[in-house]
Length: 483
Ligand SMILES: Cc1ncc(COP(=O)(O)O)c(C=O)c1O
Image (cartoon, rainbow, N blue to C red; front, side):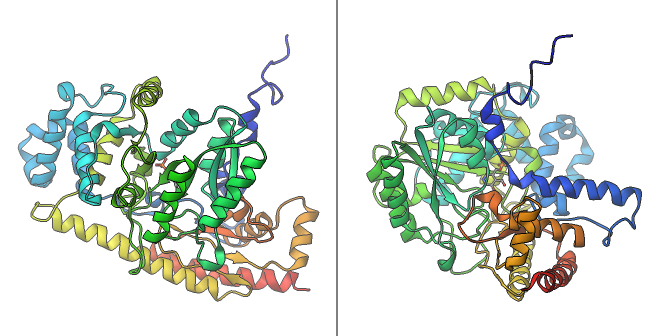
C-alpha cells in the first residue's frame, strides 16, 4: 500500500502555523475532565466544569430574546402565519415583522440561496439601523451579510494580504481570530501594545513606532485592526482617541478594520460606543479620505446568538473595481445563512417604542445587560482582592483580563514541564476547581507579564461559587510556590 501522502509535512504550513487559544489546550483538557465526571462524578474535587473561557452566552444559560426568536420561528415555518392560534402565541409585531421579511425574500423561500451580499431588504433595514445609530447615511450596497464576523474578517485578510511582506497592525492582547487569519493568509502580524497601566489604552505614538519598525523591516503595512470594545481587554475607546486613530489611518493610507461586535456591551456610565464610521464622518472625512470596514455580529451584545452565525461588514472608501473583487469573494461562498441574515436585521432594528413587543423586549435586554454589569463588578472586585493579581475594569465586551504576578518558583515549575507560566496556572486552576479560563499568552504575549482571560458570562447564581473556588485555589497556589 502506498504511504498516506497527507502528513503534517505535506499539508499547508500556514494551517500548522495558525493557533486559536480560545479553544486550545485548556479547553480540550476541560472536555476530558467533563467526560470523566460523567462516568464517575467523584473523579475530581468538583462536580461540574465552569466554562469561563469563551464569549458564548447561551451555552451558559442566557435566554434568547423572545422577539428575535418569534420572528425567526415564523420565517422558518411560514405555515404558522396562516394558523389562527399563532395570533395568541406570537406578538402582533413579530407576526408583522416576519411577514414583512418574507415579502422581501424571493418566493418567501428561507431555504433558498440569496444574493451573495445578503437579502437586499434586510440590508436596507441594516443600513437604516446604522443611520439611526450614527446619524450619518449608510448604503445597503456597502453591507455584506456574513456567517458571523469571523468570515468577514477572513475575507478582508484574503483581500489585503499578498505575501509575508504584507503586515496588519493588531493590538496585543488581541482576539486570536486576527493572528490566526493573518497566519492562514500568509501575512505578518505587526503588533502594537495596549497600555495596561492606563486601562489598556491605545496610544497613537505606539502605532507610529510599530509602523516605522515594520517598515524598516521591509513590511508593507496595509491595515490597522482596532477592537472596540476590546477583547480580551474590555476597554472602550474615548471618542478623542478614536479621532486620533482615524487621522493616523488616513495619513498613513491604512485600511481601518474596526471590530465593533461588542457595540452593545458597555458597562460603565462614563463610556459610550461610537462607531469609527460615525467618528470619521463627524470629522468631515468621506469615502475618499479613509477606507473603513466595520464588523458586526449577532453573537455578542445582549442577544448572544453565537450559534446562529450572523453578522455583517460595512465597507466604505473602496474603489468600485475593489468592491467588485470583494463581491466576487462573497460569491465564492454563495451566500451567508438566511436565519443569520434575518437576525442581523433584527439586531440592527429591534422593536421600537410603541411596538407591541417593545416593553417585554426592553425588559429582557435591560435584565441581561444590568446583570452583566453586576457580574463584571463582582468578579473584578474578587480578582483584585487576590494576592499578586491586578485587573482593569471591564468597561465593555464580555471579559476580565487579570494580570497575575506569578512567584518565580511557579515560573520554574512551568518551565520544568515545558509550558508557559500562564498555561501552568490555568491548568492547575482547572484541575483543582473545574474553572476554565484562557491563558493570556493565547492573545499575544505582553512581554514579561502573565494574564488569563475569564468571561463574565456564567449566570449570576454561579458567580459566588466561582469566586470562592478561585480564591481558595489562588491562595493554595501562591502558598505552594512562594519563595
Ligand atoms: C472581537 C471579536 N471579533 C469577532 C468575533 C467573532 O464572532 P462571530 O464570528 O461569532 O461573529 C469574536 C468572537 O468572540 C470577537 O470576540
